[in-house]
Amino acid sequence: SVSGISRDVLLSLYPVTGTKIYMNLGQPDVIQKYLDLPFDGIGLMRIEFIVSEWIKYHPLYLIKIGKPEEFVNKLAEGISMVASAIYPRPVVVRFSDFKSNEYKSLQGGSEFEPDERNPMIGWRGVSRYISKQYEPAFRLEVKAILKVREEMGLSNVWVMFPFVRTTWELNRAIRIMEEEGLRRSSDFKVWIMAEVPSVIVLADEFSKIVDGFSIGSNDLAQLTLGVDRDSDLLARMGYYDERDPAVLESIRRLIHTAHKYGKTVSICGQAPSVYQEVVEFLVKEGIDSISVNPDAVVSTRRMVASVEQKMLLQGLRKKLEE
Ligand code: PEP
Ligand code: MG
Image (cartoon, rainbow, N blue to C red; front, side, top):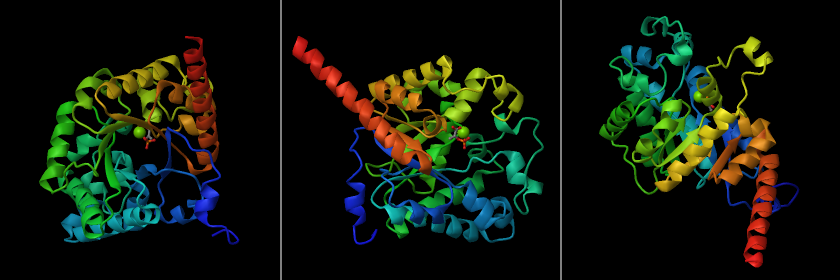
Protein backbone atom coordinates (compact mmCIF):
# COMPACT_ATOMS: atom_id res chain seq x y z
CA SER A 1 0.00 0.00 0.00
CA VAL A 2 1.02 3.60 -0.61
CA SER A 3 0.78 5.47 2.75
CA GLY A 4 -2.37 3.62 3.78
CA ILE A 5 -4.10 3.79 0.41
CA SER A 6 -4.63 0.34 -1.05
CA ARG A 7 -3.31 -0.55 -4.47
CA ASP A 8 -6.86 -1.19 -5.70
CA VAL A 9 -7.88 2.36 -4.86
CA LEU A 10 -4.82 3.72 -6.61
CA LEU A 11 -5.44 1.64 -9.73
CA SER A 12 -9.11 2.64 -9.83
CA LEU A 13 -8.03 6.24 -10.43
CA TYR A 14 -6.89 5.41 -13.97
CA PRO A 15 -9.40 5.44 -16.83
CA VAL A 16 -11.14 2.19 -17.81
CA THR A 17 -10.56 1.22 -21.44
CA GLY A 18 -12.13 -1.29 -23.81
CA THR A 19 -8.76 -1.98 -25.40
CA LYS A 20 -6.59 -3.83 -22.91
CA ILE A 21 -3.30 -2.27 -21.88
CA TYR A 22 -0.55 -4.82 -21.41
CA MET A 23 3.08 -4.40 -20.38
CA ASN A 24 6.29 -5.86 -21.86
CA LEU A 25 8.70 -7.44 -19.41
CA GLY A 26 12.04 -9.23 -19.57
CA GLN A 27 13.49 -9.21 -16.07
CA PRO A 28 11.21 -11.15 -13.70
CA ASP A 29 12.15 -9.56 -10.36
CA VAL A 30 11.37 -6.00 -11.48
CA ILE A 31 7.65 -6.88 -11.60
CA GLN A 32 7.43 -5.85 -7.92
CA LYS A 33 8.43 -2.32 -8.89
CA TYR A 34 5.60 -2.05 -11.40
CA LEU A 35 2.67 -3.40 -9.44
CA ASP A 36 1.20 0.09 -9.05
CA LEU A 37 0.97 0.54 -12.82
CA PRO A 38 -2.43 0.09 -14.48
CA PHE A 39 -1.74 -2.85 -16.81
CA ASP A 40 -4.16 -5.69 -17.61
CA GLY A 41 -1.48 -8.34 -18.07
CA ILE A 42 1.96 -8.99 -19.52
CA GLY A 43 1.55 -8.94 -23.31
CA LEU A 44 5.13 -10.02 -23.93
CA MET A 45 7.31 -11.75 -21.42
CA ARG A 46 10.71 -12.22 -22.99
CA ILE A 47 12.58 -15.18 -21.48
CA GLU A 48 15.97 -14.36 -23.01
CA PHE A 49 16.97 -12.44 -19.87
CA ILE A 50 16.28 -15.45 -17.63
CA VAL A 51 18.34 -17.67 -19.92
CA SER A 52 21.32 -15.35 -20.28
CA GLU A 53 21.43 -13.91 -16.75
CA TRP A 54 20.04 -16.63 -14.48
CA ILE A 55 20.71 -19.88 -16.32
CA LYS A 56 23.76 -18.65 -18.25
CA TYR A 57 24.29 -22.00 -19.99
CA HIS A 58 23.16 -23.06 -23.43
CA PRO A 59 20.23 -25.47 -22.97
CA LEU A 60 21.81 -28.10 -25.24
CA TYR A 61 24.96 -27.99 -23.11
CA LEU A 62 22.91 -28.60 -19.96
CA ILE A 63 21.26 -31.55 -21.67
CA LYS A 64 24.68 -32.88 -22.69
CA ILE A 65 26.03 -32.76 -19.12
CA GLY A 66 22.87 -34.35 -17.77
CA LYS A 67 21.38 -31.30 -16.05
CA PRO A 68 18.34 -30.37 -18.12
CA GLU A 69 16.26 -29.79 -14.98
CA GLU A 70 18.44 -26.80 -14.17
CA PHE A 71 17.09 -25.09 -17.27
CA VAL A 72 13.50 -26.12 -16.60
CA ASN A 73 13.53 -25.14 -12.92
CA LYS A 74 15.13 -21.71 -13.33
CA LEU A 75 12.94 -20.83 -16.28
CA ALA A 76 9.85 -21.93 -14.34
CA GLU A 77 11.01 -19.91 -11.35
CA GLY A 78 11.36 -16.72 -13.40
CA ILE A 79 8.00 -17.12 -15.12
CA SER A 80 6.17 -18.01 -11.91
CA MET A 81 7.60 -14.95 -10.17
CA VAL A 82 5.74 -12.76 -12.65
CA ALA A 83 2.62 -14.92 -13.02
CA SER A 84 2.03 -15.19 -9.27
CA ALA A 85 2.61 -11.45 -8.72
CA ILE A 86 -0.13 -10.44 -11.16
CA TYR A 87 -2.47 -13.46 -10.98
CA PRO A 88 -5.09 -13.83 -12.46
CA ARG A 89 -4.07 -11.36 -15.13
CA PRO A 90 -2.46 -13.19 -18.11
CA VAL A 91 1.26 -13.46 -18.80
CA VAL A 92 2.04 -14.16 -22.43
CA VAL A 93 5.37 -15.99 -22.35
CA ARG A 94 7.26 -15.95 -25.59
CA PHE A 95 9.39 -18.98 -26.40
CA SER A 96 13.05 -18.08 -26.83
CA ASP A 97 14.00 -15.90 -29.76
CA PHE A 98 17.76 -15.59 -29.50
CA LYS A 99 19.64 -15.45 -32.76
CA SER A 100 22.45 -17.97 -33.29
CA ASN A 101 25.18 -15.40 -32.52
CA GLU A 102 23.45 -14.70 -29.18
CA TYR A 103 23.02 -18.39 -28.37
CA LYS A 104 26.68 -18.89 -29.16
CA SER A 105 27.71 -16.48 -26.42
CA LEU A 106 25.90 -18.52 -23.74
CA GLN A 107 28.25 -20.75 -21.74
CA GLY A 108 28.90 -24.00 -23.54
CA GLY A 109 27.06 -22.67 -26.56
CA SER A 110 29.74 -22.49 -29.23
CA GLU A 111 29.65 -26.18 -30.17
CA PHE A 112 25.92 -26.07 -30.90
CA GLU A 113 25.62 -22.92 -32.96
CA PRO A 114 26.33 -22.33 -36.64
CA ASP A 115 28.08 -19.29 -38.04
CA GLU A 116 25.37 -17.46 -39.90
CA ARG A 117 25.89 -14.57 -42.24
CA ASN A 118 22.49 -13.06 -41.35
CA PRO A 119 21.41 -14.38 -37.94
CA MET A 120 18.53 -11.88 -37.89
CA ILE A 121 16.88 -13.79 -40.75
CA GLY A 122 18.45 -17.12 -39.93
CA TRP A 123 17.93 -19.95 -37.48
CA ARG A 124 15.61 -18.25 -35.04
CA GLY A 125 12.09 -18.62 -33.68
CA VAL A 126 10.05 -21.63 -34.73
CA SER A 127 12.68 -22.86 -37.22
CA ARG A 128 14.75 -23.77 -34.17
CA TYR A 129 12.08 -25.62 -32.27
CA ILE A 130 11.32 -28.01 -35.11
CA SER A 131 14.98 -28.66 -36.00
CA LYS A 132 16.62 -31.94 -34.97
CA GLN A 133 19.35 -30.08 -33.08
CA TYR A 134 17.27 -27.67 -31.00
CA GLU A 135 14.04 -29.63 -30.54
CA PRO A 136 15.19 -31.20 -27.21
CA ALA A 137 15.82 -27.67 -25.87
CA PHE A 138 12.42 -26.48 -27.04
CA ARG A 139 10.90 -29.36 -25.11
CA LEU A 140 12.59 -27.99 -21.97
CA GLU A 141 10.93 -24.62 -22.54
CA VAL A 142 7.57 -26.37 -22.86
CA LYS A 143 8.25 -28.39 -19.70
CA ALA A 144 8.93 -25.15 -17.81
CA ILE A 145 5.55 -23.76 -18.92
CA LEU A 146 3.84 -27.01 -17.88
CA LYS A 147 5.49 -26.89 -14.48
CA VAL A 148 4.30 -23.33 -13.89
CA ARG A 149 0.76 -24.00 -15.09
CA GLU A 150 0.20 -27.43 -13.61
CA GLU A 151 2.52 -27.93 -10.62
CA MET A 152 2.35 -24.32 -9.46
CA GLY A 153 -1.26 -23.81 -10.52
CA LEU A 154 -0.58 -20.58 -12.41
CA SER A 155 -3.12 -21.02 -15.17
CA ASN A 156 -2.71 -17.38 -16.22
CA VAL A 157 0.39 -18.34 -18.24
CA TRP A 158 -0.10 -18.41 -22.02
CA VAL A 159 2.49 -18.92 -24.73
CA MET A 160 3.57 -17.15 -27.87
CA PHE A 161 5.64 -18.39 -30.81
CA PRO A 162 8.10 -15.83 -32.22
CA PHE A 163 9.32 -15.37 -35.77
CA VAL A 164 6.71 -17.60 -37.36
CA ARG A 165 7.24 -17.90 -41.10
CA THR A 166 5.00 -20.71 -42.35
CA THR A 167 1.92 -22.68 -41.29
CA TRP A 168 3.70 -26.03 -41.69
CA GLU A 169 6.46 -25.15 -39.24
CA LEU A 170 3.93 -23.75 -36.79
CA ASN A 171 1.82 -26.91 -36.94
CA ARG A 172 4.91 -29.01 -36.28
CA ALA A 173 5.94 -26.90 -33.29
CA ILE A 174 2.43 -27.05 -31.84
CA ARG A 175 2.48 -30.83 -32.25
CA ILE A 176 5.73 -31.05 -30.27
CA MET A 177 4.23 -28.84 -27.58
CA GLU A 178 1.19 -31.09 -27.39
CA GLU A 179 3.34 -34.21 -27.22
CA GLU A 180 4.74 -32.77 -23.99
CA GLY A 181 1.20 -32.43 -22.65
CA LEU A 182 0.60 -28.71 -23.21
CA ARG A 183 -2.72 -28.34 -25.00
CA ARG A 184 -4.89 -25.39 -25.92
CA SER A 185 -7.93 -24.90 -23.72
CA SER A 186 -10.27 -22.10 -22.74
CA ASP A 187 -7.74 -20.81 -20.18
CA PHE A 188 -4.61 -21.60 -22.15
CA LYS A 189 -4.13 -19.46 -25.21
CA VAL A 190 -1.58 -19.94 -27.96
CA TRP A 191 -0.50 -16.78 -29.74
CA ILE A 192 1.96 -16.15 -32.52
CA MET A 193 3.96 -13.07 -33.28
CA ALA A 194 3.03 -11.37 -36.53
CA GLU A 195 6.42 -10.08 -37.53
CA VAL A 196 7.27 -11.85 -40.79
CA PRO A 197 5.12 -10.47 -43.63
CA SER A 198 4.06 -14.00 -44.67
CA VAL A 199 1.88 -14.12 -41.55
CA ILE A 200 0.00 -11.04 -42.75
CA VAL A 201 -0.30 -12.32 -46.31
CA LEU A 202 -1.72 -15.65 -45.10
CA ALA A 203 -3.54 -14.30 -42.06
CA ASP A 204 -6.64 -16.32 -42.97
CA GLU A 205 -4.70 -19.58 -42.74
CA PHE A 206 -2.89 -18.63 -39.52
CA SER A 207 -6.17 -17.52 -37.95
CA LYS A 208 -7.43 -21.08 -38.25
CA ILE A 209 -4.49 -22.37 -36.20
CA VAL A 210 -4.01 -19.95 -33.28
CA ASP A 211 -5.98 -18.09 -30.61
CA GLY A 212 -4.35 -14.75 -31.23
CA PHE A 213 -1.62 -12.65 -32.79
CA SER A 214 0.77 -10.09 -31.40
CA ILE A 215 2.35 -7.71 -33.85
CA GLY A 216 6.12 -7.49 -33.59
CA SER A 217 6.38 -4.10 -35.19
CA ASN A 218 10.18 -4.06 -34.82
CA ASP A 219 10.72 -7.05 -37.07
CA LEU A 220 7.62 -6.35 -39.17
CA ALA A 221 9.01 -2.92 -40.10
CA GLN A 222 12.42 -4.41 -40.84
CA LEU A 223 11.04 -7.15 -43.08
CA THR A 224 8.24 -5.20 -44.77
CA LEU A 225 10.58 -2.38 -45.70
CA GLY A 226 13.69 -4.49 -46.26
CA VAL A 227 15.59 -2.40 -43.74
CA ASP A 228 18.08 -3.85 -41.24
CA ARG A 229 16.69 -2.72 -37.88
CA ASP A 230 20.27 -2.40 -36.57
CA SER A 231 21.47 -0.15 -39.40
CA ASP A 232 22.20 3.31 -38.01
CA LEU A 233 22.84 4.54 -41.51
CA LEU A 234 19.37 3.65 -42.82
CA ALA A 235 17.75 4.82 -39.57
CA ARG A 236 19.40 8.22 -39.97
CA MET A 237 18.05 8.42 -43.49
CA GLY A 238 14.55 7.83 -42.14
CA TYR A 239 13.99 4.37 -43.63
CA TYR A 240 13.38 2.50 -40.39
CA ASP A 241 9.96 3.79 -39.43
CA GLU A 242 7.16 1.66 -38.01
CA ARG A 243 4.75 4.41 -39.09
CA ASP A 244 5.47 3.77 -42.74
CA PRO A 245 2.15 3.34 -44.59
CA ALA A 246 3.14 -0.17 -45.73
CA VAL A 247 3.62 -1.27 -42.13
CA LEU A 248 0.38 0.34 -40.95
CA GLU A 249 -1.54 -1.22 -43.84
CA SER A 250 -0.18 -4.65 -42.87
CA ILE A 251 -1.33 -4.11 -39.30
CA ARG A 252 -4.77 -2.97 -40.45
CA ARG A 253 -5.22 -6.04 -42.64
CA LEU A 254 -4.20 -8.41 -39.88
CA ILE A 255 -6.66 -6.91 -37.40
CA HIS A 256 -9.54 -7.15 -39.84
CA THR A 257 -8.72 -10.69 -41.01
CA ALA A 258 -8.13 -12.10 -37.52
CA HIS A 259 -11.41 -10.62 -36.31
CA LYS A 260 -13.26 -12.38 -39.13
CA TYR A 261 -12.21 -15.62 -37.42
CA GLY A 262 -12.87 -14.39 -33.89
CA LYS A 263 -9.16 -14.22 -33.07
CA THR A 264 -7.51 -11.47 -31.04
CA VAL A 265 -4.78 -9.07 -32.11
CA SER A 266 -2.26 -7.41 -29.84
CA ILE A 267 0.99 -5.55 -30.47
CA CYS A 268 4.22 -5.84 -28.52
CA GLY A 269 6.78 -4.06 -30.68
CA GLN A 270 8.17 -0.66 -29.71
CA ALA A 271 5.93 1.44 -31.98
CA PRO A 272 3.07 2.26 -29.53
CA SER A 273 5.55 2.84 -26.70
CA VAL A 274 7.18 5.54 -28.79
CA TYR A 275 4.48 7.03 -31.01
CA GLN A 276 1.13 8.18 -29.65
CA GLU A 277 -0.24 8.47 -33.19
CA VAL A 278 0.32 4.73 -33.60
CA VAL A 279 -1.75 4.12 -30.46
CA GLU A 280 -4.55 6.21 -31.94
CA PHE A 281 -4.34 4.32 -35.23
CA LEU A 282 -4.44 0.93 -33.49
CA VAL A 283 -7.48 1.78 -31.38
CA LYS A 284 -9.35 3.13 -34.40
CA GLU A 285 -8.64 -0.10 -36.29
CA GLY A 286 -10.05 -2.08 -33.38
CA ILE A 287 -6.97 -3.78 -31.90
CA ASP A 288 -7.79 -5.86 -28.80
CA SER A 289 -4.76 -5.00 -26.68
CA ILE A 290 -1.59 -2.92 -26.76
CA SER A 291 1.53 -4.02 -24.89
CA VAL A 292 4.01 -1.28 -24.06
CA ASN A 293 7.15 -0.69 -22.01
CA PRO A 294 6.58 -0.02 -18.29
CA ASP A 295 7.29 3.70 -18.68
CA ALA A 296 4.57 4.02 -21.32
CA VAL A 297 1.75 2.17 -19.51
CA VAL A 298 0.12 5.24 -17.95
CA SER A 299 0.35 7.50 -20.99
CA THR A 300 -0.90 4.72 -23.27
CA ARG A 301 -3.90 4.05 -21.04
CA ARG A 302 -4.79 7.76 -21.08
CA MET A 303 -4.34 8.00 -24.83
CA VAL A 304 -6.46 4.90 -25.47
CA ALA A 305 -9.21 6.19 -23.18
CA SER A 306 -9.37 9.52 -24.96
CA VAL A 307 -9.46 7.92 -28.43
CA GLU A 308 -12.18 5.48 -27.33
CA GLN A 309 -14.23 8.31 -25.86
CA LYS A 310 -13.92 10.31 -29.07
CA MET A 311 -15.04 7.28 -31.13
CA LEU A 312 -17.97 6.66 -28.82
CA LEU A 313 -19.15 10.26 -29.06
CA GLN A 314 -18.82 10.25 -32.86
CA GLY A 315 -20.87 7.07 -33.01
CA LEU A 316 -23.58 8.46 -30.78
CA ARG A 317 -23.74 11.72 -32.72
CA LYS A 318 -24.18 9.78 -35.94
CA LYS A 319 -26.99 7.75 -34.41
CA LEU A 320 -28.76 10.96 -33.27
CA GLU A 321 -28.51 12.45 -36.77
CA GLU A 322 -30.10 9.36 -38.34
C1 PEP B 1 9.35 -7.21 -32.44
O1 PEP B 1 10.00 -7.70 -33.38
O2 PEP B 1 8.62 -6.19 -32.56
C2 PEP B 1 9.43 -7.82 -31.10
C3 PEP B 1 8.64 -7.43 -30.10
O3 PEP B 1 10.37 -8.82 -30.93
P1 PEP B 1 11.93 -8.52 -30.71
O4 PEP B 1 12.11 -7.04 -30.62
O5 PEP B 1 12.30 -9.25 -29.47
O6 PEP B 1 12.53 -9.11 -31.95
MG1 MG C 1 10.81 -9.69 -33.11
